[in-house]
Length: 397
Image (cartoon, rainbow, N blue to C red; front, side, top):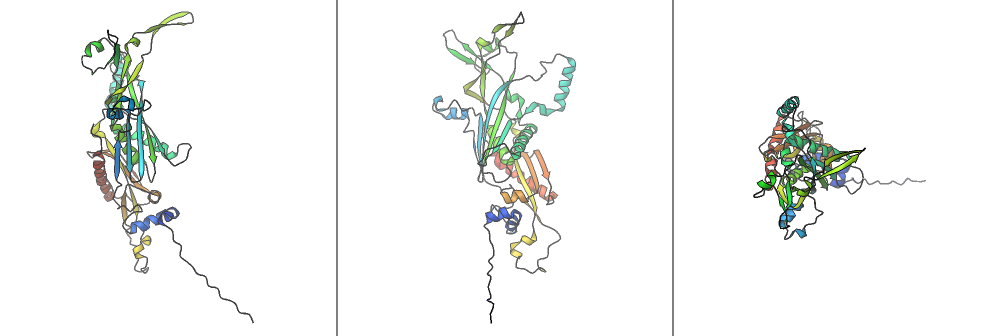
């Protein structure tokens, strides 16, 4: 007679660390944290990450002003303005460089035809945006790998360009080049006379240039340790970097102002004027003149509905006692951070506002949670507080 042996199977519950659970089921991880009254980052619902700013220290002219001698600054440093912004564990490094281009846009002084003058006047009256310009940003989110730029980087770069253009922060007049002239004195010494130099009227009156030039600015924005959407940090870092920009003074060598040369083409001789040799002063600069009242800062908020079934405090209650309320509670989360929040929150409110409360950009993306007027009012109030705090960190100049 044979007897069957009974086997006992012991079942152990499977548990995951919070960072693993956030990858397996980010929405469940987020809901569990929210049910306890805080977020996966241990911040409050309306709490922002701390921001520290180091503005201008990477730029050439800032280093020249703080160096004992010009020899301590490398000639390879072409940075005109910079910012190292730290928000939580994320670093954003912004470097602004520039160049000079010939300005071929039509002005009132250049118009000879009456119809063109009327068209130009109508354009200026009805489009104030034409008086402002933008920088050309390139965003790079460092991930420890090489390859082509991602969609996020391209979209963020284009959004930075468009927002800065319409925020009316950078006037075109601030980028106009007013060159000086490099002359050789009777004693053989070389001197650069700028329009703002003392006793420069005699020299500048005899030196007339028909061409016009303008500075053009480029911004390289590098993001290290990305944990969530990057536009807000990139925009805020760009604001600090722009505020610290020092434009190099430009000058023309007097020997190149009246040079002519003969060109022979197809048996005919023609005399053309030599192109101006426009140079930048490596040691002297002027601060950029921004529309300070329009300097603004970005902030983003997410709206999400709380799931009663994920409430840890009510897991041990009976189903009859844990009835789902007809009215779902929606919470507003400021400064989205982490993979769980970024992937689970579909309803977003994004805004760029100045210190006086004027909005330069405002967008609402719905999906999942319903954005109510109460949530909008709360996000606007938080945005004003955030902008006021970030504006207090701007450099004095």
